[in-house]
Amino acid sequence: MDINQENINEFLNKYISFVNRISDKNSYPKNLRHVLYLIVPAFVQKYGFNYESTIERCFEEVPIIISEKENDSCTAFFARNMKKNPDGEKPLYYTQKYIVLQQYQNASLIELFDNIIHEMNHAVNSIINEIKYDEKTVSMRTGLVYMTYDRNNLKKVISKDNTTTLEEIINTRQTESLIEIIKNYANFEIDNPEFSSCLYSIKSSISSDYQSNAYLLQSYVCKELMKNKTFIPTVENLRFKGNVDDIPSWFDNITNIDGSYLKLARLLDEILEDEKKLVKVKWFKNIKINKIREKINAVLEIVAIFDKNCVYR
Image (cartoon, rainbow, N blue to C red):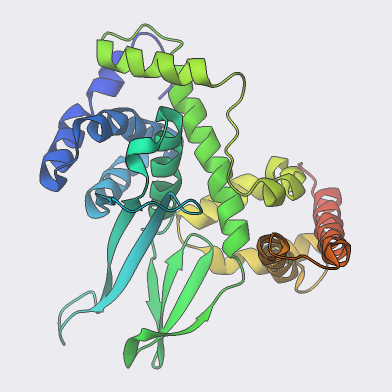
């Protein structure tokens, strides 16, 4: 379904009752409710009307909790608790999910949109094939990342994939595209004055294409990979449908280098950690910077090989 002037108002109005229902259920304040009026249809438009019920289920199952705490380094986060049903009940394992918004009152409108969309997009890309388990372990998926627990002690984390930063880079890119979808609603005549006022504010605050402030260095390093027309559609589709186990072999088959995907993901994690530590370094800072540059060059080399070997890029 293409969104145009003939159907835009019907499309946006379609989700008002749904947003009102989950807002009443979770006691959302009015300004949060009004943000969701535009966010929910944007998600449906991005992921497709075939997945409308999946999107709505995610917004219903993942409440947004407003915290009074302030945190300069983390304004919002998506979290889950692993649970096990009593014997005989299915599914055997499930999660309790929620998003926490911090510094909510001080956030600008565009920051509020960015934070909610970014964290809810993690949730949307984790809802299908969320959990897998064997005789000893149970694993919970967040986009590309599996966190593995001991089946006998669900509070004991055994391992976590080294794909966290790549997950954040892709999620940030999708956050930007979702905000662009919402911004483009302002190009139509909107009947609802509250919607049109909010859309005017969004469009006025974004000079050109929206760019998130999250993971700037890592996103810059991977900008060519994020533009690759083979990588992005494939990974986004596998990630949304929960078939991420296929990604490493698919990526390595294109580069013709075994382990290249996992090496790329590991280097991105290390660059992020090194960048965090760099702020605290007082002596020999140039040595640390050079090590980061070496890792960036190694990432760029892998990306260049992948890009070169793609028929469609």
